[in-house]
Length: 265
Image (cartoon, rainbow, N blue to C red; front, side, top):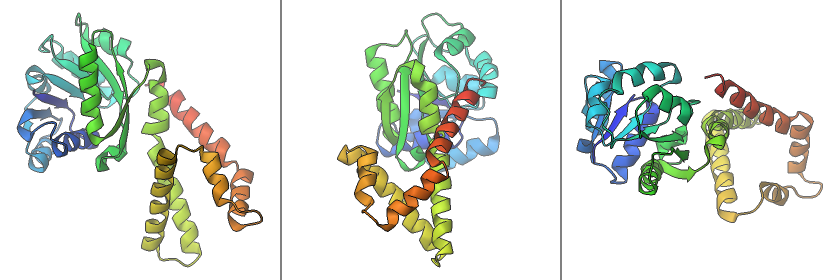
């Protein structure tokens, strides 16, 4: 199976790394194209993949084609490749905000096998979370293949398309919010006298461990929060301040802002 990539940025690199590390694909099974020669050479040196000289070459050879491009370039790229795309090729899009209907309209290819996905940057360390939505022309076997490929760098979860923009907001964008939280916690630790490097180590590990506890315990986050807040203790004082400052409302507003922007892409 030949897997093609159009776009070789960070997310494509994460997917390629996951495929190779898990043995789902060998470097020789992957062909990619990118806008610049420097990017193509970097990915070739990093992963040993084949690089195409143009998008059409990658699309023509691919049994599975991953569209890993920015939304602003989507129409232009589809115009380049739709004439050479083979009918049996499974097309997996990670383009933010572009619906199955929009992609199908742009391709104008009858019976197009199209899967829309939304991964996130923790894929770079094998801890991604990807929403997967299959189009009408995709068989159950092909959907399973897409889930398997996108699960090579973390979790892959099938969702209805009506939730895909929400997946992008809560999973795709939220790592930036979490990084800000880690940075803020570390700033507080530095204010308390802790060296900066050690502060990041403590806070990042605390966030990692807390997330793992949510996933593995199956308990409600509120119940886990209550376990940390002893009566009359120190933690509940910090929680009180966060509530006073509107932390929950700010986070909800941030997700809603991402959703609103996504609809404009």
